[in-house]
Length: 229
Image 1: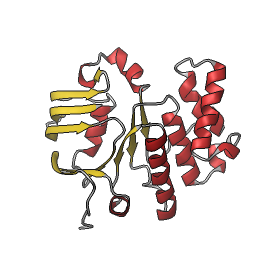
Image 2: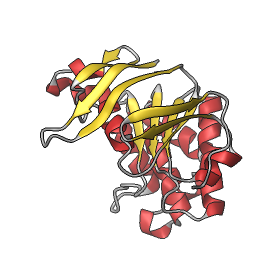
Image 3: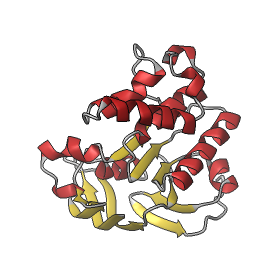
């Protein structure tokens, strides 16, 4: 489902962000990406969502050779994947329902199907009763649930969660992990979760890929204890 082969990335300013990365993720896997600041996590995400292209190697997601996409084709590709950010990026002037619906409107989903899918994902993230609320009326955890609902509205094969618990307290962080696990199970969505939260990684064990200075330094297939140091 996701295949990175001999991928390196050097920016125009001379910074080498990734070195000869090889990575394979199957459809339906849930994988943590961990590593210190500057390890290459952000660059990895940018290569996967088409924001950057590799200096060397290939990046395959589903049927797409992402690094070879023409610039005009990148928006179309991005509709096939979902991305959740630490800071939610919700549209403040739209209701919860409208925020989720927006992801379906941009791909011209027929209105009946649109309303049906929005109700479906709001049930999945347990926010049906907040459909008419605005983001400012929600807690941080609820806002992140809306962001996740929007990201999965188009039934993406791949969901990239970039520090989705970074702004949440431990209790809300646990709820978000449980929600992502539910989506992974019920919708067979492949999930890559970038995180600094060692407690989450150690408590909710899954395959964990560690980056350091642009290199993959560990791939713990069944999850393993990550040291806090």
